[in-house]
Amino acid sequence: MAEEVKLFGIWGSPFSRKVEIALKMKGVEYEYIEEELGNMSPLLLKYNPIHKKVPVLVHNGKPIAESVIIIEYIDETWKHNPILPQDPYERAVARFWAKFIDEKCLPALWNSTWSKGKDREAAIEEASQHLNTLENELKDKKFFGGEEIGLVDIVASFVGFWFGALQEVSGLELLTEEKVPKLCKWSYEFVNHSVIKENLPSRDKLVAYLSARFADASK
Amino acid sequence: MAKSDVKVLGAWPSPFVMRPTIALNIKSVEYEFLQEDLGSKSELLLKSNPVHKKIPVLIHGDKPVCESLIIVEYIDETWSSAPSILPSDPYDRATARFWAAYVDDKVFPSMKEIFIAEGVEAKKAAIQQLVDGLILLEDAYVKCSKGKPFFGGNQIGYLDIAFGSYLGWLIVTEKFNEVKLLDEAKTPGLAKWADIFCADPAVKDVMPETDKLAEYAKVLAKMRAASK
Image 1 (cartoon, rainbow over the protein chains, first blue to last red):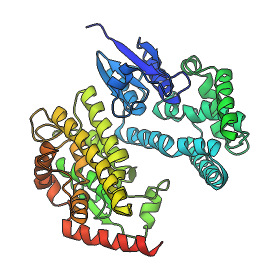
Image 2 (cartoon, chains in turn blue, orange; image 1 turned 90 degrees about the vertical axis):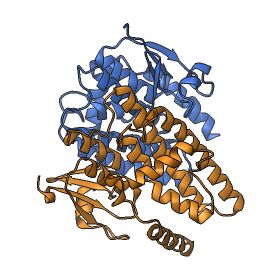
Image 3 (cartoon, rainbow over the protein chains, first blue to last red; image 1 turned 120 degrees about the vertical axis):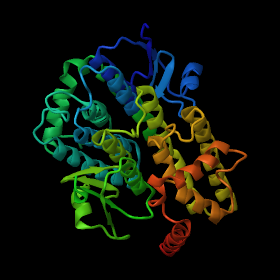
Image 4 (cartoon, each protein chain N blue to C red; image 1 turned 30 degrees about the horizontal axis):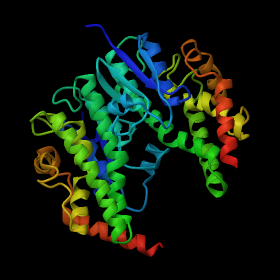
């Protein structure tokens, strides 16, 4: 049967880019459908009626939602170039850090940019702690996945790329060589990795978009 | 492996702690249960889960595994002989993981909301939100079970464990609010499933008694009121 793979995403979304990275790592051909924030297509709403969000992967007509669940599906369906480790303990560790980044780091980093007053201070404090935790976990590895990028690196793309753009816009200095040197080195390796660099949004376009949003939010 | 090679750090009222214990029971793996004192955290817990300092933690040999559903997948992959906990087909696995995440991200917070909500209107709204979620799960149950007793088919599977671990608290919520959440009218499949799940040999010894949980819930409510 011919494989039919579609991905619904948004150009600036770290969540849909994560899935694109996974597909590119596996060399899977897919059709990309650009959605608009706040104006999702009827087709997307049909495929993801519960959350009404991107990304959604549709494989031979069957939809899968939630970025990390989609990545695990991709890894289990196309088995070459594995994204998760083979050993059950290492898989559990990878899943643990992916969940930590998605559920703790991301919200703290996001809130440290957009919230105000006491909430912002608390978010900044929390974000610093989480970045230190990641710094300690990275140790002397080139990537979280070891010599090659894996699930945790893909999920950490928000830290490696998006947060750099957010820092530029907000003036925050959390991800710095002074504070988290290993994480900064990792970010550099990550965004320059052959599969990654072709699959990130244009930094200029992202900074322009976030600057406009930041200006609006500061009014 | 000797019993002491597998430990579960947990506490009896926690729905999350039931997940690894049910999974270990399904695999017939012997383990030692180390009860954490409610209100204080042991050295072992702080050492095994320094990031979150939370239960459950599975300690296999000297390796700690954290986060209840991650532990369940670890158990399934480590003791890989039958019965399997996750489905074998990747799409079915994605579906099970999707609904398990839904249960944790939407259903459980709705349940907590009912306990915290103040005033009749707020409670009613919280209850309705939970019921709406349960109706979605009923639909998922019908699709996943395909006429068999469990989400996982003939045996308890990943999604049965993920959702079933909340049943003790769901029953307490029903009692405290004098409302039927899983009922034959709105969620007939789940109403039957709940009884079969709770009676399963892998579950019945680790599911806390409703009366004990209800007492504990009252203590929690008093503590919450006192801290205001």
